[in-house]
Length: 440
Ligand code: TRP
Ligand code: ZN
Ligand code: CA
Image 1: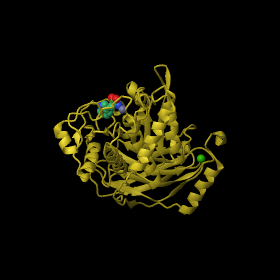
Image 2: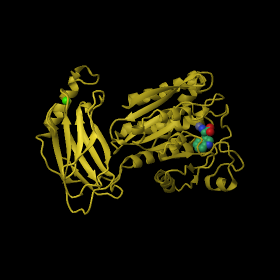
Image 3: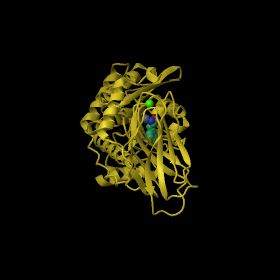
Image 4: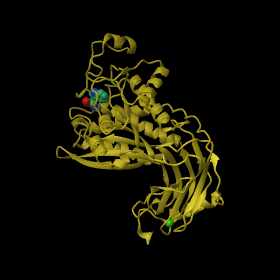
């Protein structure tokens, strides 16, 4: 009866079966988790590639009345350009439409498959320009750097612990319209899964400063460490807190950070001394003007900020070797889940702890399945009490459950045998528990 649901294919079932056969007979055992390997170093982001995107955005503006503004054809052409690159690189792209000032606007969202969707790192830039010009520093620079970094994720076939989602926002120049629309239309449960948002707006200013947003301390430090490694001093961004799309995320409590090389404000002599460039002149004399062209870019600033973006994405998505306050216990035993059958369990014995489990016990689940809507999942405490992690749903047609749940287990003794209990309640699709983990 589920055969008519879109997304359920025989090929998928065959693949899942192949996975089960390859995995061998299910066993019930648990091993303590191995430490995750140190985060891989981010690749260099080729400046030539970032600049090639700027050239394309410039041509798109030239072919569309000289701008890439909200409601104008150059905006949609910019979306199409970025989307085509991402689709070819294996991203799952979504175009979200909204209306502002009587015109249709578009956000482009690109998910990199894999990682823990319960901990999603988002990275974004606004893709619209003002109507007076092509908007190459503001903000083809951020758009191109985020695009090229996403393409680098694909070239590396990165498998981060966290889920990665990239975004290009519409109608920022009309007042952060696109990003606010995205955040406001996310269900609360989806919002809660976004562990951070990184913003890149104006990162190639011709008389550059190196500004880091003073928001989430971990994100801020990650950027500062990168520039410190280059020997480039940074300052805290103060030219307009809340004047770009990170404000839409910050307003709902999501940790944010970002980079900026300056807009209309004047570079001081102290700043010119440490960064070079011209004191007494704006960081970007062409800010919001028709001269914001490909000539309005400092290559060194664009290069450093693009590499800093990659560094932050690689390190912030890699996961932690030692979860805060926590010891992890993991079972990597594969347990087959019979189709529309009895519940199965995978056990993790916990010993040597005192007292109760925490109020925020983290339960990391990695279940491979061709239709996750079939699955009911519970955490079972040593005394047998069950905590529902997920119900079944006829409309949850994605595959796999790879996420982290948080359970208030403060009334349970920590020591003893904990179980993950999984039941497949609908016919046809199948799968197995690949691994699961408890973090105290
Ligand atoms: N797009 C922003 C704007 O036009 C540019 C900007 C100004 C900015 N101040 C900022 C971006 C501070 C980031 C941080 O207003
Ligand atoms: Zn901008
Ligand atoms: Ca099934």
